[in-house]
Length: 362
Length: 276
Image (cartoon, rainbow over all chains, first blue to last red; front, side):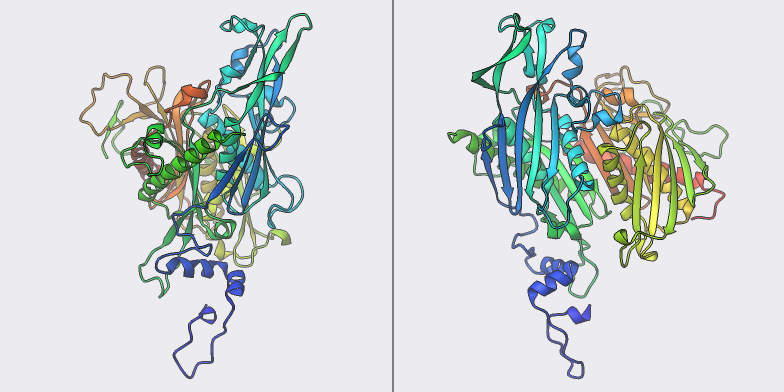
């Protein structure tokens, strides 16, 4: 480690230490490079952000013309496209429609519940089905081939997020026999089944937050054609001219991901910190992180409407819907509490962006 | 942190007494004589049965070789069908937990292979129901295999249920967390209760599910908490979730269960073996 010291040595008898350019130092010793940055005062990450700062993001909705709803999200060098396509699922006369209308309904076998389009896909995976693809060349680390561990884990995580947050009112996806008399369940002839496809164009860490934000934005921009059962033809027909938005939750929860970078004991580490928590890690930081914490939370809509430029007040109601912490052992309970507050302010910012985007004409 | 148990727990958990605690898991050590370490674990309440085998340190494939660490490989085999996305997720979660427990620097350039077979489960697709038995069983078999570990961990699954009505549980399985505002009456049936290691039926009526894993020293190893209420979604889902304060109380309780009762279970199970 001494050879990597950048400061000139004070002793005259010692040989001059090796010196490297910053870019080389970054390549050959990422852990030390990151630690030196974080131990600096004030702590700054190699990408210029402070530990609790997240990347700026851009959002564009309805850019895909063939999908019913779509969104492109870019946060730093992570870019994600999400397209939502509605497909019609016909209900056979003997089927019980109520099995489609609940999230968390238990499917019968392991292979059918995976959220991928296997045999039986729609009927067992529910009406809202996510799928993730990490496109070839999105990152140097993930080579060509069948979906690896990351893509599979991500796909399952998004499926779980949909089941946890229940974003779409499943009853609003019904297709009835005729336009009138919408109360009877016997008149249900089919359902809209929403296939959510997430394609990662470029991957630079924290794919989950970007993917989930893209899904939420795409759901908000989705317009399905009016569909009804035609009795003479005994088929479902769509009206190509009339579209309607789908019925969604009012307060959407958003995910916020944190990474913990371990700091070993060293003379430079005067404060004696064991680890530093950073918000929205990029892939360089993710490689060095020992612990990942993801919080899914909503902030009350009232606070956002009250003051759009202000962060949510400490007294505002934050509901947590999911916490996932894996790897490592250094995050304490108090840090989870701090992260929840950070997550709440980020969720509020996401919501503002989303509202701004909805207001701009397409 | 004080607790109000609906049914008072027997004072200290002592497995050496004749009647075993109804909450203690059934553990069989070394059911597979050919592997370096193996364990069969049955959750006392949900009856989820897991069989794990640990082999290592073994020779590692050149592709997976790490220059100064041992490679940990976790394979989760489903009870039904072939392994899918859910099993991959389970194995990533177990892998990341073990990464912080096993002293991988002690056997660099080797492989520690863990195979976990789900033998019996009420719901083969439910992540929360499977994760706790998988983790506990894996940790026990790692101890048997003599893999060097920094510390041991224990996992507990807690479900928050809206009402105590209709929830059947063994003694000590159901408890309630103390609220901040004064004493609550025992008769209040609508109050939230926490069910330890719930079964599939209890979980389906639960509001939220929390899988908490703590090390012997009380460090948080894994949290997998999620809202799991049923429903049709849309606006009916607005306002679901929990307050962070409630979660912190639950985490404290989980820590107590893992650090005290969990460690006692490990000690009892390995009583006649010189692994500690």
